[in-house]
Image 1 (cartoon, one colour):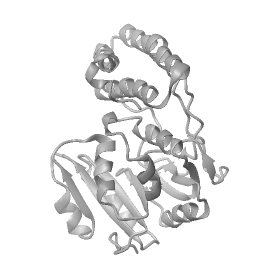
Image 2: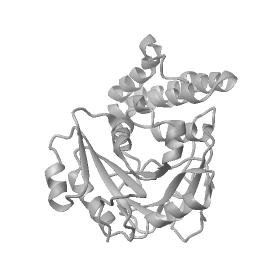
Image 3: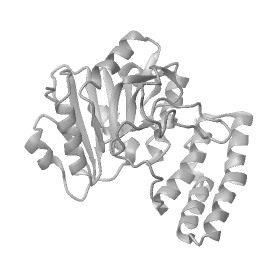
Image 4: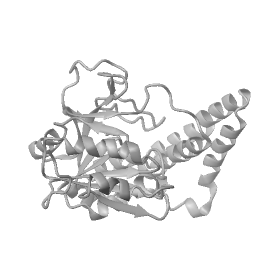
Length: 303
C-alpha cells in the first residue's frame, strides 16, 4: 500500500481540487491502495469555499496540500503543483477519478522503455458505466477545424486498443516527464479552463517529445457519458480558447484558415442555433469569447 509521500518519489501526482473534497478523498484512498511505493501526492486547492486541508490531513497526513488564494483554473492550479513536485515523472490526475491498483508501474515502464516519449496517457473508463471506454488514445488534431476525437469512446473495453504512440493525451490522467517539462515549459495558464492540455501536448511535441497511450494503466473517471451541461462559463472559455489554440500553435496559411473557419463559419453557426433556441445567455457568453481576441492586451497569447 502506497504511503503517498515517498522520500525519493519517482512519480509525483498532482490533483486540483475546487469544491470537491469528497471526490478528492476518494481519489486519494484509491492511490493509497495502489501497488507502487515511490509516489508523492500533491493536492492544489483552487480557493474552494472550504479549505480541504483539514479533511485531507485527517486521513492522509503525508499528502501535501497547497492552498491558492484565487481560482487559477486547471492549468494554473497544476502549475503550482509542478513547481514543488520532486518526481521524475509528474502525473496530472483529475480529482474526480479513481485509480486501478496497478495504474502506476506501467506508466514508469513506458517512459523507461521509450526514450522519445515525454507524455504517457493512461486508459480511462467511465466509473459509472463499468467497462466502457472514455479514452484509449486520440486522433490527430485537425489544424483547420481544431477537432480531435478520443479513440474508443463509448465502446466496451475488450482490450482492443494496444499501447502505442498516440496524438494527444487526455487531461484527466496524463503524465509528463520532468525533462520534457524542463524543455517545453509548463501549461499556458492563460487558458484557465478547456484546451490547455491540448495546447501543452502540441508544445511538448514541438519540443521533440512523443505521446504514448498506455493500455495497462487504468483510470476510472466519474464524468458522465452524456453531454455535459451547458453553462455560460463553459461556453465562454470553449469559444475563446479554441481560437487561442490556433493562434498559439499554428503559423502562416494554416493559422489564417483555422481562425477564419472558427470566426466566420463555426461560431456564426453555433451562435444562430443558440439564438433560434432562445439560449440568449449562452449566445452572449459565446460572443464575449470571440470579442476577447480583439483586445490589444490579449495579443500576447501567441508564440
